[in-house]
Each structure stands twice: as structure tokens, then as C-alpha cells.
Length: 458
Image 1 (tube, rainbow, N blue to C red):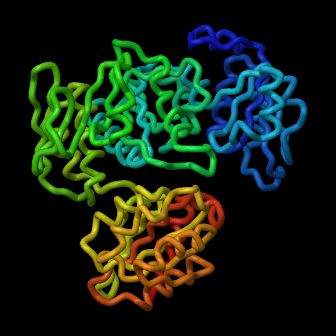
Image 2 (tube, one colour):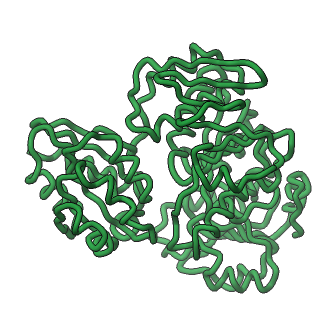
């Protein structure tokens, strides 16, 4: 099939098309069902063995979806279109062969957007996008219960579209991996929280990663809105005169159009009008969460939600699971689960959220970040770091002259070591600065295991 920038045309083209979906996780299953419903001939392919997949085989087969397990076969190269899981890089052999055969390759976000009749608010960035998406959804849902939140948070986008329920808007958390393969994906409002070095195990350099993120602007017009971080040097210097209307947000300076932080108030300027959002209780720790709150307040204000409702919802928001989540206070020691901190920058944000007396548990799958960037935030804040996982050697090399270090082979041992070192008034913080795939299924699995271990302490 021939892809265009016209979502309607692409929606029409999938009828009777042969489409391979690579990856039988939740989003792959949902997009397979969506395509089968639209009349496509779908092959769902996964490298895992059948016994390792949790599939409702009867439902999928009833929908006419073929399933292959144990590897991606050459049948994929006979298809008109390939839809990939975000975790699959375009460099794997089957996709390189498909590229040579000029078979279009897209992702679930792109395909789902062809069937979505609702306005899309898309939130991306290196850090803060999950909290911002969750908080924005909670505020807007308060006034319009038809608001849907999807993407990397909650449901896959395809499940929302499959529901055939019209929504006031769909708020999506979007990753760089998902933005690599968009064709006609077109948000009404795009948010770029920040851009810092990330996923350098997948991208050759920061510029390549940044280009993938900025792909969110590809189909936006002057009738759309871009919300971006004015305090981010890269964004400030590289957006230029992009077509969407630009609204900035900042902690350090006032904005003519957008949002800024003023003591415990969020000030918003829109088309000559000023809005003031009072934050009564700062339940969300750290300066990074002020950025998250500003964006959520700005999105809600653009949606016409009254200031009092925005203020009340932000003031009562306790955050998301695995992001600076207080697990337990035990014998005067506070345990925080920050498993979602998978980048160097997110570790820095986590450390800045505490005054000191931290025993840090860090490490995991190395994504290529510069761990020495953390050094100035370790000194005077972190009493000891307990290192785990694949990245432990590089972390130790970067931090050995800054703070005392311990090594552990398992998370269980790391928790025991941290607890043995802690005193009343200390904070034990799991903030890995790495992805989880060397030891865990995902960051959620890592966080839940940490919480279980903490609650079992006696």
C-alpha cells in the first residue's frame, strides 16, 4: 500500500492489504485487532515461543488474525505494510530487508491515528512526560469525562480507537521510538517537555535522538499549538519559526505567551488574558514537577477549564507509581521508589528533590548516558550509592572519587545493604538512571519488586 500524509487515504488503503504486526504485546494485539476490523489481512509475529506469550488465541483467530511465534519469518517480506513495536529498532535484519524492498514501516501510534476522529494532545520529551500526561488527563477528565489518556501510559492508543467511543480529546504520551516512523500523525497540541541525552544505546548521537523527538512537528500547521520548555537551551535555539503557534513555559523567566512559575502560583498568559493558578499543597517533590504542573495547567486552560478546578486538581495530585513514590517510613527511614528514573537527568531531578542523607540504589541496563553529569548532585546529598546491574562498572568509574560505593548482584541484596547502612532521618532512594531490561521485565516490574522488598523488611 502507498502511504500518504492523508490519514483518511491511509485508512482506506488498509482494506484487503496484507499487514505484518511485529510484537505481540498489548499494543501489537490492539493494533492487529484494529486493522483486522478495518478489513486488513493481519499476520501477528513475535520472536517469543507460543508458551511464553499471554494471548487470547481464540479471540485473535476469530478476528482472522494469523499468528506466528518463535521468530519473524520471510512471510513478513510478502506484506504490503509492517507495523512495529516501539522496542524494535529499524536496524534488525528483517526490517533492513523490508526497507530494501521498500515496504512501508510504521508504528501503532501512526496506524491508530488514521482511525481517530478526536483531537490529539501529544506529550513527549526526555523527562516528565508520564507525570504530565497523567496530571493533564486527571484535570481535563474532571470537566469532561470523555477524555482518554493513552500511549505509553495506560491503554495503547489502538485500544482507545477500537472502543468506537467519541472523545473530547485523546491525550497521548509519545516516545522517540514511536515518533521515528510517523507519516501522517497530526496532533492538535504537541508538548515537548525537554530534550537531554537519552537512548544513546539506540541512537548514534544526541542529534539523532533529538530529530526523532522533533518529528512530532512533522504534520503540524499554523492552526495547531506547540508547548515547549523555554529553559531548555536546545529547544530554545533549534525550534526557530516552526509552523505551530508556540507557547513557552519556564521556571526562570516570565513569558508573553505561555506559563511561568511565580512562588506558589502558575501564571498563564494567553492572547492578552492572564490566568492565575494557586498551588496550595506541593505534594509533588522537586523542580521538575513544577514544569509538569505548568504544562498541565496550560493544557487545561487552553481547554477552557476554570482556574479553581485546575488549582484543586494539581494541589491534590500525589504523582504516579514509580516516580518519587513514597513506599514506606520504617524506623525513621523513608523509602522512595523512583524506578521510572531511567535517564541520567531523571536521577538528577530525583536527587534534587531531597536535601540530603540519601542512600542511593542505582544501575541497570546502560543506555550510554554520561554518569559524571550527576557528580555535583551526589556530593553533599548522597551518603552511599549501592550499584546494581550492567551499568555498575561505568557508574563506579564516574563516582568513585565523589561518594562511597557498594556493589550488589541483586536488588534484594541492594535493599538489604542500603537498609544496613541507613539511620533514622535517612532516605533510601531507588533511582536507577538506567533502563531495567538487564534484570527485570520493565521499570514497573523493578519498582514493584523494590516495593515488595521494602515492605518485607523487619
